[in-house]
Length: 103
Image 1 (cartoon, helix red, strand yellow):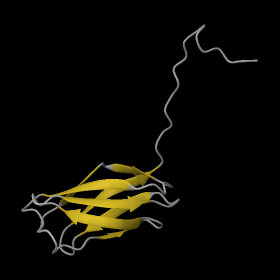
Image 2 (spheres, helix red, strand yellow; image 1 turned 120 degrees about the vertical axis):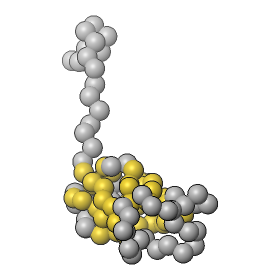
Image 3 (cartoon, rainbow, N blue to C red; image 1 turned 45 degrees about the vertical axis):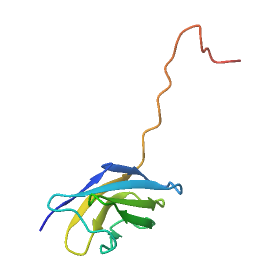
Image 4 (cartoon, rainbow, N blue to C red; image 1 turned 180 degrees about the vertical axis):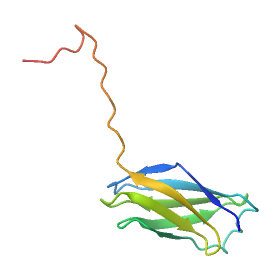
């Protein structure tokens, strides 16, 4: 049995916008038009579409609900996981004198 490697290793929880997962199989790749993927493990994650390209790599488009956890992707024989988690907010840099709080 091969392992499915999923990139990115973490996707954002609670995001209704499409998020793309790129899948690579550690053995030979998949064949276009013959592979069906399933997802499980995290409530609220929806598989929108999946595509296998001519090189055997797969791309899955998903949306996530409000539940965090470990998402499993399977092709019926092989599986892999990725994390569904909150993404840390971007930190603002403070430059004295340039972006003083107003008021």
